[in-house]
Structure formats: structure tokens, C-alpha cells
Length: 221
Image (tube, rainbow, N blue to C red; front, side, top):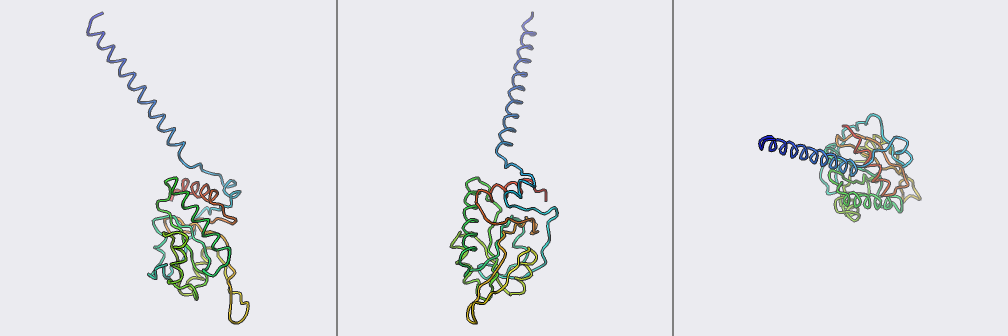
């Protein structure tokens, strides 16, 4: 056997080993990538975890409101990111602060996973007569400095709430004081600004993270 043949065989073996190692590394990388991706839950699994997704997202009507800093806000506030919006009010004694705290803890869990980018959390006031931007802003920032808020003209709020299947009504204890009865779901809005689904109470941060990650992973836009 000549030296030239031996050299060619040696090069062939090296190329074979290199290709084998390269293929194995690609397989390992692919496996690790798939392993780190959120598991996509089936529709029954989502519902069992209080998450409901529409087959076709619903488009809210145009609105004009104010954000938590008093700046004008319209449908574009929802665009380019996922939004979890709770409809409540500042004077709410229990349900609202509990929901806000659960969303705060959900946000912290997403941050720990590195999956909080392009996700925003919001309180839409169903008591806009009392919840001015000056009142709403400090309230939402008490839970998290990045939390958003919407308030404004009552009929505009009513329209937005209806587009997200949220009902609310004033309940008067007497002539000088009222509370607000309202739905308790968290609306899920996709990056197009469309109503994608909702989460039903009771809210558990780990459950919200599990279902939200699944919905986002399977969303095709």
C-alpha cells in the first residue's frame, strides 16, 4: 500500500469522524432546544387549567382612552406585544388587588425563564369616573413599575369591555357610595391587538405561565 493511498484513507476517516461528530452535535443541539421549549397543551388541557383560546381571534372596535400616565391611548397600545388585561378598579377591595398580585408574580416567573419580553400587563378601569390617570398610575405601579393602565370616558370603557366579554355595573350602597360589579377574567390579547382568549379565576401564577407559554408557542399569527 503506497503512502498516497494511506494518506487518502486517513483523510477519509477524519472526514467521516468529523461528519459523525458534527451530526451528533446538531442532534444534541436540536434535542436541547426542543427540551427547553414550552410544552404545547391540548385544548382540553388548556381548559382544565382555566385557559380558553378562540379558534379565530376577535378584533376590538377602535377606542380612544388615556393610559396610566394620562397620555392618549388607542388600539395601538396592544400592538406588537402580548397583553394580559384585567378589568377592575382602584377601590376594589379584594378581587382586583388579588388578580394584580397574581399577574405580578406571573411576570416575575416569566422574567426568570427569560420569556417576559414583549409581554405587558394592564388594568383597565371599570370605574373611570373615580379612576383618573393620576389615581390609576400609582395604583398599577404599586404592583409593578412596568404595569400599564387604561381609563377615560365611560362609554369608551364600556365598549372596550364589551369587546372583551367583560360586563360591569355600578352597585349603590346608598346615594353617596357605590361599588362596581364586574367580570373576573383576564383577557389575552395577541400582538395584532386582537382578543385571543381569556383566563378564568382562580389565578395561579404557575398555571398562568404554563398556559400562556403554550398559547404563545402554538400561535401562528
